[in-house]
Image (cartoon, rainbow, N blue to C red):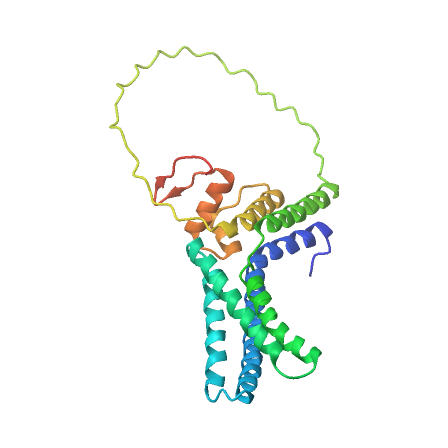
Length: 274
């Protein structure tokens, strides 16, 4: 039978939300990028066919189909340079200049083709659409600050609901459990054993895996929710199951957020929260 307790339902929703937030966001970003790629290819194909037809009417021969293709390929190549992280800034600035020049020339050819003013503007704006779509696509990434703020707000709402739920605890009568005084017995002192000095042990540092930055907000929310609902710290295996990560990654997330130092292969990991 399903539970009708509002606190239990809210806790279940919070756990499911935290478990599915990251995969859902990554899936949405992938869908947006596929739609942007479709718009880019459609706009480039439209501009290419329009320019080729116009150049063919201007007696350009078979070069009418080659020249627009070269310009479109140059624009795609320069946009790839601009969008790729890790490329030197001077290379990106040069690629942006070449891309702007090719885009302006392509838009000029589209506008110079015969037809009404509105039709020429539409074909010229197709190139502008290519520029805008690609510049936006290069900036699509998760907003980790917004994710953390949303998780904190959800956790605060659950805490408020839990605090307002009255807790009924059975009362037990007080029982006098004062022990009776034990009789005094004189026992001779036992000589202390000789102290044994153990050799110094130097722990071997254990290589610790890198913590993915995008998992930190979700892990912090799951750890706080678990401690609030169960009253005990979350275990490494529980955190790994909720986040669908390996136990090593879950151990590092727990170590980074709470400062706990669980053992790795029997060797304690020293240091506090990083």
